[in-house]
Length: 228
Image (cartoon, rainbow, N blue to C red):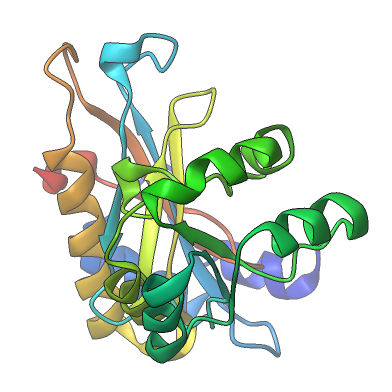
């Protein structure tokens, strides 16, 4: 571990669980890299993702965005394609992009949006897109006839949250340069969405732990009792 990381560790009390506002302030303070670090949140839930009735997945628009430019690929035809282009989609098309991904291993995009009628075309890419978490889904609003709205939301800072195999959700909250206020607003929006998505089958304590950290900084543990 480098000297900057060691200096950052000294600012934290090892066993302490911090209030969200204090934790966000500390994460900004312990960010010492020369670039604008991303702040990430990691939430461990008291559910079992192996069971279909305990899945936690959804999408939320962060009030202040993520600080990252989201490149969108829209599968659509006709008027839908035109609407996507007018909304500012980076790439719009149909079979030609399926072929480009298959033959060129092309992934110069961050998000795929599709009209429902295009899912038969995209289905051929399931084995490639699935493992990368890029397969569009009605659940997170990326399969929709309203492609213009989906593109606008993606550009505004819409992010998807979902459990990994260890029942943890990992999401970006923004950049260090956002400052504590904007990060707090994004934090509240995301945590609120996760709490609202609590499955009826979940028993006992829902949020087991919550940690936030900058790209190169140490993790700061949040008092989950303060999260509702």
